[in-house]
Each structure stands twice: as structure tokens, then as C-alpha cells.
Image 1 (tube, rainbow, N blue to C red):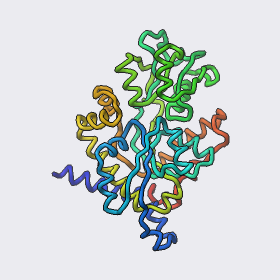
Image 2 (cartoon, helix red, strand yellow):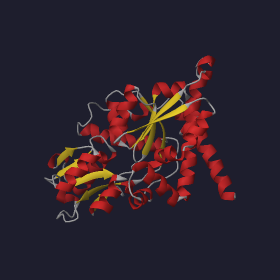
Image 3 (cartoon, helix red, strand yellow):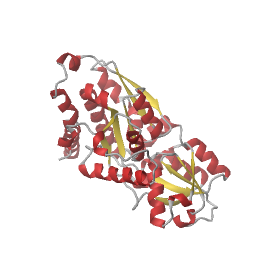
Image 4 (cartoon, rainbow, N blue to C red):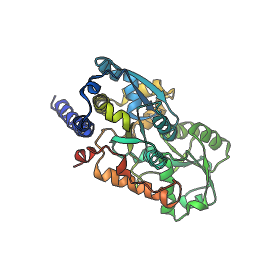
Length: 330
């Protein structure tokens, strides 16, 4: 009983901090009529992993928002970059991605804001090779073809892995493919290695016998970020507060119910229980405000891509925060 009470109190504190920012927008002059206006629907982008998939599977957000006269529309995306394209063009309002996609999106001028993040989950992404591959170390990637989704979290993993091995990015052959196409290339031997995230990583391990050359441990944090369009965040702080409160509840539940998590993920993704159980075992639960340290970590990601001219211009990550978000990070 005490543990449950502590979890509830912790969740309330976390969500309160998360929305010190967006609640502040209301006090900054939004007309009262606009505040009270029914919003109709929140459109959420998700991928085949993590808390949003669990939230969709449990259906608790729909019940909570129905009380506000708000519906929920879910749209699945194969990877973070295309999800944020959807956010930028206005087809979704809110979604979750890894470290790199917001960097590429911000550099391209997307008007998005960070509204929270899950803790680091470095084991949830890796560079894998076929089970019979002669590649044994990261240094062996020199001159090899490596499949990856351009601008996804694994793009930064690959940069850091090569840096650790003393291999220049220019000395490998990146092959930019979305996960499904990358898996096909990996299976037929068209590429030598594949940088990928869960649950695609877990599927490659379980179904193909893929061998992990290196995962993110000791290389990257691999945060999962929750982002919203700036316009939506400014106009709908209460809806976003409810969404993140439900995310926090699912995090609490998922941490303590691994079997049920696997069942929901299997149903939602169409992947087998053993695959999603492996992926879920590497999740990090516990939505938090975007802190000064996390923004500093994101700035390092941005600088790395900028130095290699992989983004069109340098960016300042903190520009993608609502002004009042500075209060939530102290």
C-alpha cells in the first residue's frame, strides 16, 4: 500500500513539473474563451515500442479524455523522422521519438517543443551483424555497408560507435533504409551490419540469430522524447497534461507487470511474445521533465551531426522548449 501511495505521489509531482511549462502559457495571456473551447481530438503519433504503444493498448487515455469531450486518434509511423514530419505538417499533435529525430527536425525548421522524456535506455538499440559474420569489433566496420534509418536514434549510436573504434564516418558506407527494408537487406546479405532499435532489434536477435556487435551502453543515452507541435502545446496545455499523466500511470503499471506488457505489445505490434518480452526487458520507464542535463545531452547530439554536416545548420536545442519550461528544469 505504501509503495502504491509513493508511486501516486511521485507521479503527481512529475506531471506537475512537466506542466509547469504548458500551464504557464495559459497565464501568459491566452483568452479565457480559447481555454474553455472544446478541442475535439488529440492526434498521437506512435511507433512499435514503448509507453505510447502500451497506452494505446490499454485504452485508458480514451476513457480519461472522453470526460473532457476529446477523442484520440492514433497514427503509427515506422520511424521517428517521418513521425516528426507528420508533426511538422500538422497531421499529428503529439508523439514520441528517440534522440536524433528532433535534431534533424529542428534543423529543418520544424516548430516543435519537447514536453518530456523517458529515462536512458541504451540497451534498446544496437549495431548487429548476421550470425555467421566475420565482423567481430567495431573497427571491422571500416569499409563496410551499414544499414540504418537516416536521422533516427541509431544514427547517433553509429557515430559514437565509430568514434570509439577510431573509424571515420566517411570510411563506412551508410545505407539509408527504413526498418522493414533494412531487415530485408540484412537478411539477403546486401549490407554487412544494421543499426536498429527495439522491437526490430529483438526480432532480429530472436528470429534471425543476429549478433550484437555493440549496443548503446557506454556510448549513448538513448532517451525517448515526447514532443508536441508548439501551436498545439500553447493552445492545449490541459490536454497535454492529461496525456502525460496517463503516460506516467502506464509507466508505473508497466514497470511492475512485465507479462501483461508483453501480452499488450504482442497484440499491438503483431510480434511474438518472446520478441516483445525481450524488447520490453530493455525499456526504461518513468516519464520526467526535460532537465538541463538532458538538454545538454541533446545539444551534444546536435553538435555531432552539425560537425559532420549531416544537418543543414547548427541548432540550439533549448530553443525547442516553451519559455516556461526553464522553470520545470530547476
